[in-house]
Amino acid sequence: MTDSPARPSATIARRGFLALGGSAAAAAALAACTASSSPTGPATPTPTPWAPPAEPMPFPADYLWGTATSAYQVEGETALDGRGPSIWDTFAATRSNVKGGATGDPAADQYHRYEADADLMSDLGVGAYRFSISWSRILPTGSGAVNQAGLDHYRAVVDALVARGIRPAITLFHWDLPQALQDAGGWGDRETTARFAEYARTLFDAFGDVEIDWLTINEPKTHAFVGHWYGVHAPGLTDPDAAAAAVHHQMLAHGLAVREFRASGAKGRIGIALNLLPVYPIDPDATGGAERVDASENRLFLDPVLLGSYPIDAIGPYPGSLPADATAFEALQQPGDLDVISEPCDLLAIQYYGVTGVDDGGNTVTIEPTSAASWQQIRAEGLYDLLTRLRDDYPPIPILITENGMPDPLPAVTVDDPYRVDFLRTHFQQAARAIDEGVPLIGHFVWSLLDNFEWAEGYSQRWGIVAVDFATQERMPKASAGYFSDVIAANAVSPD
Ligand code: NOJ
Image (cartoon, rainbow, N blue to C red):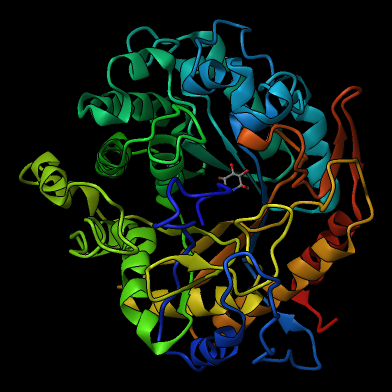
């Protein structure tokens, strides 16, 4: 699912992440799900098709263990040092758009507290930190003159990490488009792709001396669907055709940035961060709908990057598809675009939160227990299904999990989170299982380092392994932080 509680119409219900495959696990899920396919009914956990071995499962020696955040969710200080407004400032300024009328201030105040947060990560033993750069701190109106204070800030963050032996992983776009670019058409306008390439080049030139894992675009699906179709995220549009345009232009922007990266000669590696969703048809009649949900949730993003083509069944007036005009989507594509989009990357970043069932009407249905985020159906084995599907269906490429996690059940601060310990353990096990079976997985980042601003949920959903009191900005590691630290130290995951 795309980080949103509900899809815009009843006929095309909530979307999920897609992992359709012919594996035994999928077949087991299918059989188990048939009995519990109600979209709103209680989820019946599927029987566990796999049990961990008695001995700890080791990870490769150079496995990258990390934590992740993004600029608007943790930084605060949205008007300091020349930062221009982004679409999230505008969106959150309308109180009804975000729970509690919350905004990106103060968030976790990481703009000021990055040194202490780097210490915290160092204490946990993490090898990498994924954060995003706010485009409008670098280019306050999206293009033109560079704001040196913005570059200086992120140089200080990078230096603080490198000084502690923590590898920076930097997302270029995590949904906070400069408002001036939105005013000029946003991702509906092809020009935005050129502005993104310029912004990316500015950063590659500024930080090219550092070994960094660059992620071009974070979850283009969520930004396109939830921001341009469901109207739940900025920029708050409810137009499937705008969503389709946002898909193509974000994908094109990704490819242009990869080309800029190669041309710049910057150190490090580059890829795109895609949220993917294993999809399980709940009965044999649901296979067609599930394939279309898989197309719009997964292949619409994987295929252009890894195969150089768009799937033909992702867009159109069919159950499970993105209900946009397929002809208009094709008309956006100029000769050579798919060559740009499929420019070879160094890695594929994936973000995994759970699975979905699909019924014969192409509707996503609840087949697993959900977290406090109603879109999140938790099934650790889905991660294995996804990873092995990527191995089987696409050309080989190193895979990095750049997000994986769950929220606390209640909005209150807690450091007692056995559910998250269990979530992490079972997902690490499935990652180790996939590695054992030849999946080229190179690292695993937990979402999130800190409790933070969870978009339309404001501060009511806490996703951190470290709790934050937003009034005092005190950091309090949860039990899951201690557990994660132990796993990193052992570089292995135990059965329980
Ligand atoms: C994915 C997004 O990248 C991140 O910003 C968000 O907080 C998490 N999912 C949890 O919803």
